[in-house]
Amino acid sequence: MSAKDLSIIILAAGMGTRMQSSLPKVMHPLAHKPLINHVIDTAAQLKPKKIIVVVGPDMPALENAVKPHTTVIQTNRLGTGDALKQALPALKNFKGTVMVLYGDTPLIQAPTLKALHKRHLAKDNPAVTVLGMTPPDPYGYGRLILKSGDILDRIVEQKDANASEAAVTLCNTGLYCIDGKGIQDWAAKITNKNAQKEYYITDLPQIAAKDKRLTAVIHCDYEQVLGVNTRAQLAELEMIFQNEKRATFMEKGVTMQDPSTVYFAADTKIASDVTIEPNVFFGAGVAISKGCHIKAFSHIEGANIAQNVTIGPFARIRPDTQIGENAKIGNFVEIKKSKIGKGSKINHLAYVGDTQMGKDVNFGCGGITANYDGNKKSQTTIEDGVMIGSNATLIAPVKIEKEAFIAAGSTITKKVSKDALGIARARQSEKKGWAKTHCAKKK
Image 1 (cartoon, helix red, strand yellow):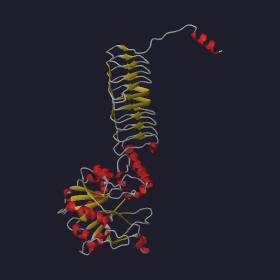
Image 2 (tube, helix red, strand yellow):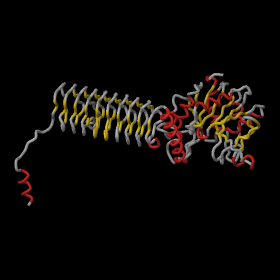
Image 3 (cartoon, helix red, strand yellow):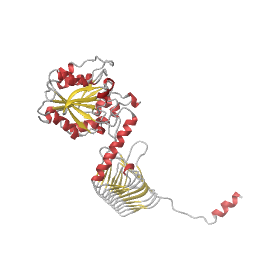
Image 4 (tube, helix red, strand yellow):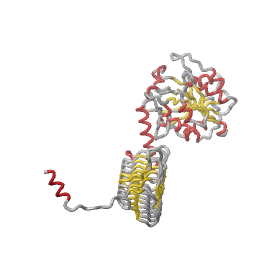
């Protein structure tokens, strides 16, 4: 059976009241990416025929975040079984495997889901295949009681478990593969005959057993299926994710002097032979090429950094920035929406925004590209080999042509021609004896 015979349902209708937020729980970010998008991107690696996301009412931001995938609204939050029922009309006539995931388990890995699917397609033809795990403390989890081998006998909830059942450490993650040929009929038989008056997907193995169909179980690392219900749990998952990301980068040839102080986004890309000093933060959309040195306390987001660039310390690189090979961006420099050419240097105390800078430019201390007039942003163009003196202000829109010099302290409002010296400051004058006379008046 191919991946085209697999469809995936992701349950994401809960608001997550314990998060104390107006934002739907699954929209909270982990490494600068919503929880739900972590799950969707992992699910997409299985190349399913369809991904269906079950959302709650009045969640337009969530519906938009999961596009172009199908969304189904669970109007009344009546449990996981009800959520499954709401999704099934979108799978009418589908006879393959239906995988059920949760939108708040962002650490689940594609190899685990592939193993779950593979076990479900085994010759013993299980109706349901359950993903199990062994947490450090199983209290509160449903226990997976096995018949023999990996065949499930029953799922027992904590409150219903006797002493021997409570001693079982294999627990239910709530992630399943279900035979699409029977899912419509089995789901219809899920009832709400329980204290909570809700419909639970955990009833499926027992329902399928009445059709003499078995349920299989496979195991995974419990950290992969940790869910998020509180801000503290979100922080715990962030720590796990960051530790995994740090380890992965170091295995691929990245040096970190103090890994625990470096924070990555989910999509951060870093090549080998990059050195990262302590307390560096990477936002979304960053790619760092080989041989770069990122110094301490730098903050980088939305930037593409070419080979052998030095950044920092205390530098801020903002979105839509490209920095060319061998460039140097020093301390207390901020760059936004700019292209910095090969070999150019902005060594200290500068702001460069909405700028096209050529190669081998030297942008002096205290320099500013004044890009905003209160109504719109305008562009500054600095061509190859330009020297910008200290404390110069370039008021956009303005162009500095090749090999030009800008005198220190100048405020430049017009084009400076190739090879010219641009100087725009008051001529210095000297009044002999002025200080002595001035001070005498104070006495």
